[in-house]
Amino acid sequence: MQRWRALLALLLIPAASAQQVQRAGDYLARMDTDGDGRVSRSEYLDWMGYAFDRMDRNRDGVLSADELPGGRGAPLTRQAHRDRLSARFRLQDSNHDGYLDARELAAPPH
Image 1 (cartoon, rainbow, N blue to C red):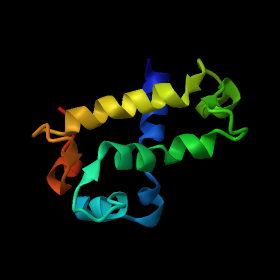
Image 2: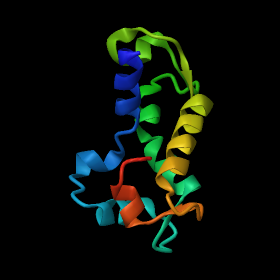
Image 3: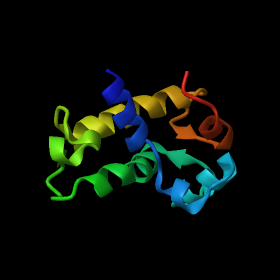
């Protein structure tokens, strides 16, 4: 279980962390690819999928044991990863409008 938490934490680190994003507004600006001032589920999945894509060295859409942190664990498919991200998105979308604003991005999922 602890291994899965570590993997999930790694997979949820967006590309922005390497670019020193400091505030929720910065995340919003980077994630909001269509410029409408909010983050859709699609934008969220694309942004948060960055870590999966980096780890999937053979580009087969599955993180095999040798691609996982520590070199072991059950395979994780891109779809399973996206499903987990979708669940997280729904938790963070506190007003249930289908989008995340800066306040929702800054708040931990309920």
